[in-house]
Image 1 (cartoon, helix red, strand yellow):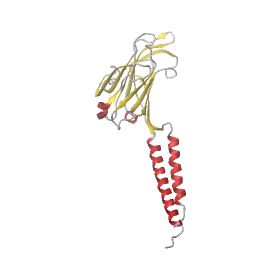
Image 2 (cartoon, one colour):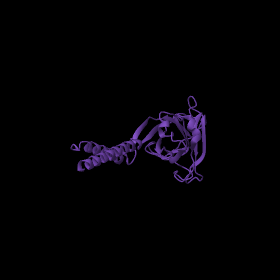
Image 3 (cartoon, one colour):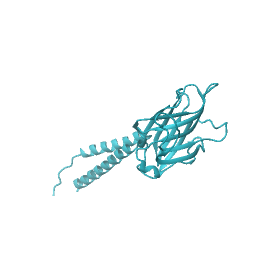
Image 4 (tube, one colour):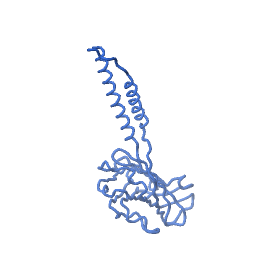
Length: 236
């Protein structure tokens, strides 16, 4: 009877170890978040001007960060991001998207308008081939009041009702930005800057993924250790 109890205990340990291993492996894989970093450059002015867009996965959608500040543009003292635009790999998901002032945007209340439509949203005109026209997504930005109106860094959330939506849908897709009121020290540029770029996507571990991976490894270690146990033959 003691041998039977030992066999049952070992089988139970094997099942627990197997479940821990599976859970840890699945959790560690699913915790990897998509990240797209796009470097943009002016396509309409002879004076070089640059910007960066970062799109990363969050629960229920993506977080978008738009930035033109120093050191992206060395010595920049003023600039105002007016809007950002995107192409997306799966246009069927456009109807599931929303961008609003939900309290998580920075600066607060920065979003003034949105457009979602396959190749039908205009960010700007100009540039070879009109790259700022016929975008899938355009988000208008702005804050009333001169003192607070110069915004060099913007963060907002683009949410979706579809689980298929992720940052990787923007990988290698065109993105754009429109900027005005550009100033370096006492030198102010005339007009606005119209920027286009795209960026590769890559997989990066989200916070806590290493801990989840450790759980998985512990589970598999437990499984391999317990599976090495031997039991005596049962005499009947």
